[in-house]
Image (cartoon, rainbow, N blue to C red; front, side, top):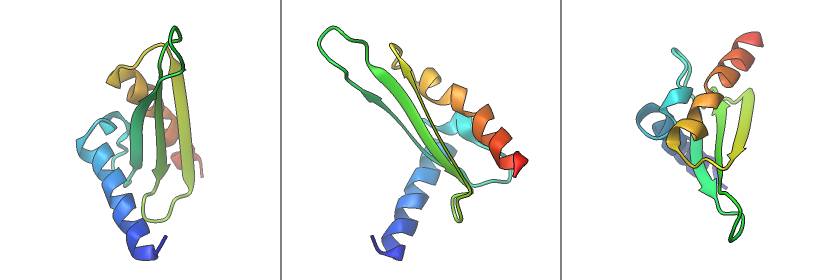
Length: 92
C-alpha cells in the first residue's frame, strides 16, 4: 500500500471514531482511528461484535482489539474499548 493510500485509509478510520459507530473510543486531544463490525460464526452460534483501534492515528503507538460473543449492538462493539486505549495511551 502506498503512503498516500495508507493516509487516506487512516483518515477514513478516524472518521469512524469522530463521527460514526466508534465514537465511544474518542480520546480528547488524540486522533483515534477505529472500526466496528460483526462476524457470523455459524447457523446456531451467536454473532461476534468486534472493535479495533489504533492511536495516535498519524503515528500509531497503541493498537487495541476486542470482541464479544452474542451481542451485535453498537454499544457492545465500542463501549468496552473506550477505557482501554485511553489507559494504554496515557501509560506510555
